[in-house]
Image 1 (cartoon, rainbow, N blue to C red):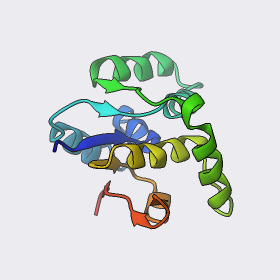
Image 2: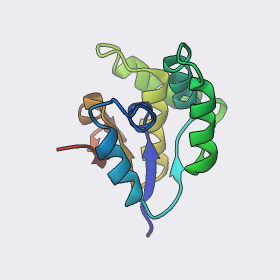
Image 3: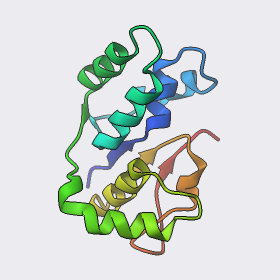
Amino acid sequence: MKTVYIIDTSVIVAYLNANDEYHQWVNDTLKTIPSGLLTCEPVLAETLFLFRKIKGGSDAVFNFFEKAPVFIPFSIESERTQLHTLIKKYANLPMSLADACLVRMSELYQDSAIITLDSDFEIYRKSNRQTISLITPE
């Protein structure tokens, strides 16, 4: 079975920001991914929010989503109960909607890995107790 790669906001930010300390790692990592990336709308929203004050920031974000290619197959509407459960479970962190969506995606796509720079994903569990396969810098 082919691995599905799910991308987090942190990776997109590092990719688009040449001054980010993980920029080179992200570039090198994304070159090794054999197919398209999956994400969710909250990741797009978070990324746009972080680039809102940068001239040309929104263009850079949308260009990334068009060229990467990044696909957004996830539906908050159909997963809202599970998302609410995850957000309540990790309220002490707290868990963002984007993180909840990515964790839920890792449950829906059994053979998946989340590409992230966010250490919270080391704490999160899918299907209650299973660790999530992650691609992170060492």
